[in-house]
Image 1 (cartoon, one colour):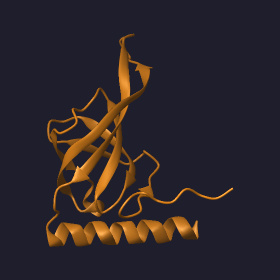
Image 2 (cartoon, helix red, strand yellow):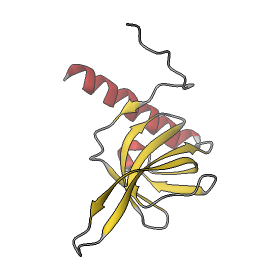
Image 3 (cartoon, one colour):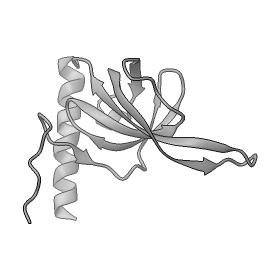
Length: 120
């Protein structure tokens, strides 16, 4: 059995989903995978494809980045503390061009995380 070829322009680094960030409007998101071109997020609700998305990433990942929602899909539901249910979604965001300094910080973080995972 052979592995399927990578379709992305650059590989993505899988993250645990434990790292958290926020969108500009305050939506809490968890980081699932990351590259220099974009990110996959887990969150409650749906984000509209084509909508602008400003993410406040942790400083170790370069800080705030601007992007555009490419896709958003419901992957399940979860029970809320009040007994209600909330949609659980995954969303793909393509980054807008990132200025040189934050881009370098993101590239460094990706390189360091990749090395750390390989050593574990």
